[in-house]
Length: 402
Image (cartoon, rainbow, N blue to C red; front, top):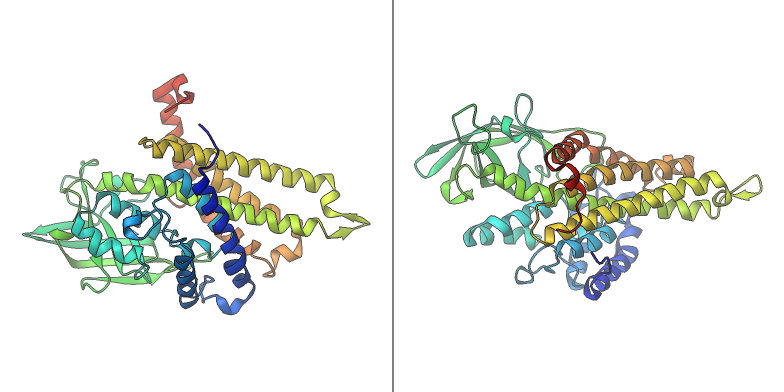
């Protein structure tokens, strides 16, 4: 494992960093640039997107033939980390969740027709998308075997009935990927799901509410949806009937890791803001940064961020090699989620009232960070994955190589 970045990837990383510093971070200081849900206004986001496209920094995860950069996972790790040094960064480069994971999935498993109709508009930045899986109790969350929303087949049409909630981006999305139960066997937990594609304008479903939360929200928030006979053509079924669980596995593994890539950028930003402050702020005749307690806190944080970067790069390397990297992704997800929260908390503590106020983005990141230990599988679920892997592998759990 050589952690030296390919010169092309390193050059892109440097470009992204410069773009974020020049064009994106300055926008955070003006509240007029925020929408009512504390994210960048969409019209301003689209202006940034035009600049990113012109700079050749668009859709890093997508193939060049689709207008992207065609980066492997290790290249994406370097790109995304720099992109999310700003709270607005990933959306500007079209590598924000949930579009990021949806594009990757559609590119991997969609038919040529599906890629053209459902994927390309997302790549081009013409539409936002959403992944519709999580349900209220007794439906499925981290356990997709519990999914209750059902798809009933009537010839070449499927009718959807059920309820979903905490669906990211749904309030502004136009393209949706839906997970529904197609098996009538209540004991079937492996081939019971099928994935479908539908458009916002199709009848037979509605947004019940945009769910208020700690926020700040991604674009489109998290919503509760109700399906009462939504009709989907079999042409818009993704993969084969019963392949839904496979769809979730293909999508969610890399998506969890790209979350970590972005969270490392936010963690580094917290440290940058804090280092700038403690290097100038004095108390009792001594700069804060000269105090051992402050150095210890920042040293621990730098240590944790670097561990996270190594875990992410290892998982990215495994994915690039064709491995599913389940335990590597779970390890990264646990550690980086904790590190993001620690980075924001440490930043607020060392900035004092300034950190708690709206004068920096630290309090924004702090509230955002709390969801990191929940989204795409709670930390407890990922620890369970690791425990099961160790139980199955024993000492080989720590083997070197692929």
